[in-house]
Amino acid sequence: MIRDVIRKVEENFFRGVMFLSSSVIVIALLLIVVSILYKGLPSLSWKMIIETPKGGYYFGKEGGILNAIVGSLYLSLGATILSFIISLPLALYINVHQAKNGKLVNLVRFLLDLLWGIPSIVYGAFGFTIMIYFGLRTSLLAGIITVSLFIIPIMVRSMDEVFKTVHRGLLESAFSLGSTKSETAYKVVLRQCIPGVVTAILLAFGRAIGDAASVLFTAGYTDYIPTSLSQPTATLPLSIFFQLSSPIAEVQNRAYASAVVLTIIILVISIVSRLVSRKYNQERIK
Amino acid sequence: MKSGAKIKIDNLNLHIGNKHILKDINVEIPEKQLTVILGPSGCGKTTLLKSLNRLTDLNPDVKINGSILNGDEDILNPRTEITQLRKKMGLLAQSPYPLPMSIYDNITYGLRISGRRKKIYLNKRVEYYLRQVSLWDEVKDRLKDPASALSIGQQQRLCLARGLAVDPEILLADEPTSALDPVSSKDIEEMFLKLKQRYTIVVVTHILRQARRIADYVIFMYLGEVIEHGPAKEIFENPKKEMTKAYLKGAYN
Image (cartoon, rainbow over all chains, first blue to last red; front, side, top):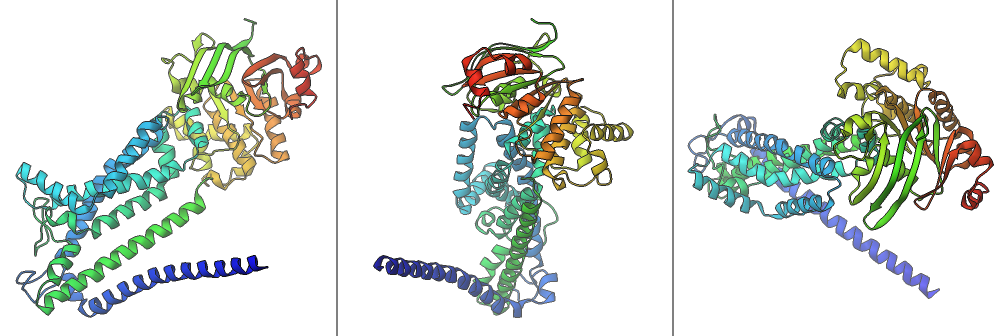
């Protein structure tokens, strides 16, 4: 009898704890979104989105954040494409070609997880060191390369987790039909996992566009939209970082507007990747 | 070597790590007959089957000694061209694994990777092999649908057709009916009986009644060893070894 009472109290206690921790997360998220929108929406105007800053991003009161929006898209797209070219073959290679070489595969996974854990400022500093060595200046290209290094581990491991779920029987079927390992990888495994791969790409893109530290030393900042890979570029995270510290209200507004735009981009990416992976779970062959 | 033997297995030993999975296998698989590898679960039947087309290569830590001859060709020779070898052997797995593509593409996959791309040719082959497995009438109007939309029984027949489409000499089947309902199982068994006129078929099963229905030749295995092998009639009606007798009476099931 007394035992039942204790169990009931326990149950209620833990339910309360779980409810509380869930609430903290939800409230924090809501507060962040609300405060960004509250500060940012009034600053966000059509002009803000279609104009670059006039009279210097730190002092000029006129103009908008087009430089940062386009710069961020250039940078993240470039980095996503570059890392895709490297990540896809690597993820397939460890899952199909080296599948039976468990020790090697686990070592690669471990190294990638280590790389995943390195803070992005370290990638920024690393990129900067390399740039000095080669005598490069801050540029879109340097930013793309640095951000790629930073998101490759994320992309490879996300694809890897998807490829891992491919059933052994499907591999055996493909091999039995006379497929080589590469044919199995690209025609069967990849095809089976396309939605998961898309999710991995979107996840990496989201990380690329949201990161400030890795582009701080490497991509620089500018008022203009870059017209070549060798020019520096503005980015949304740095647009927030530089302009929020300004004493001028109009400049600060640009920072808030950047925050809204960045948040919207990332929310859209998260939602799309959710939808894709939901569809994926319905359609895949079990 | 008895005339008409298709595959000759000599002194085959297979270890995974330090486990001895197959012990001194010496057996011949007759051509254009249906051979059943029979035995209780975990006796190495599937491993023996998979070493025939070297799917055992996919396992880490596999050590394999001895020889498996298909004609003059040693299957286990590392220099044997593995994709060509596997093309000669269709595989039907325990549960169907259609490729993640349309019904049509499932059949043509094997042809396309070997360079056959002419549309007219592919269309003909698709119809021919789907008819072979009595699937044509059920799917002819939806060849472009994903194969995953088929029922499990249909998927298994599709996998059989897909295996036949690469024009193998040998069909390997690993408990091909274990995931199927009784009607689909019967379909598959009947197809095997029809196909054995033209193919050498090796079926792994632990279902004694199934073995009795379809086998021409039986290899009885227990704990990694071949206990007895011979024509189905002899094994079922007049087994020589005590263990076989006991198994046939149902002692291990």
